[in-house]
Length: 235
Image (cartoon, rainbow, N blue to C red; front, side, top):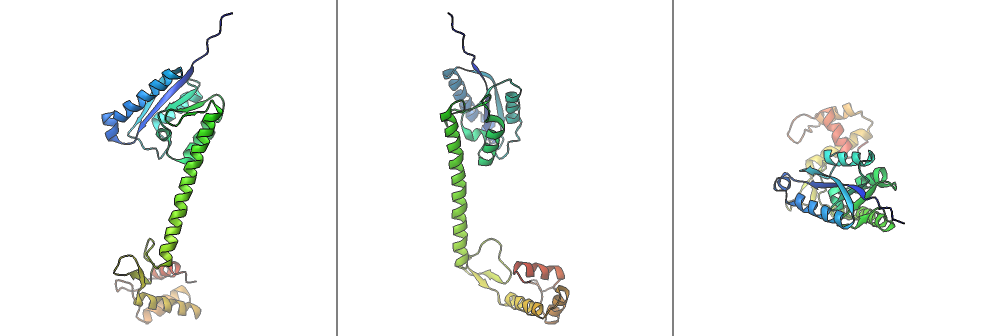
């Protein structure tokens, strides 16, 4: 009995370079295409098309080439999407999760990545994809934790974090915050006035009567005082 020949997987290749310079020279595109062509030949894939996004960032999935490739998958014109490396598809863990959930979670559409050894037709390929996503998520959370710890350390040592709060100024080292005598006096006057039950408008009048002004020496406005109160958390 003659064997029925296996149907080759119809595959659409996707290439992306992020800069116009790369797109103009075509070096990265040519390298990616060579990898895709060799992979398709090795695993007997039928490359029905190779779609290019040239000079396009991976920050968004709203790319004409990518959307066209995904459209081919859902129209049944191809059964697999092939990339040279996963970061050609996306660098975002969130976007990767969306792509997998919306396009590659079924048994009918496959994601293939040459460099990452991903083939979601197999359990091993799905495992690799999940591990890569988990590692990327871990890296992002670890960076966030380190950033929080660094900011907390700077704050504990009186160093500047972002915008300089009202009532403080930078020391000569350009890092450490020190109290600004004039602004601290104004803050003290605001707190004292609020403790006396004065409204915000009455506080402005009271500050003006005492001779307080803005940093530029102009009269204080209600909006400016409200902003100072909000920043200093004065109720």
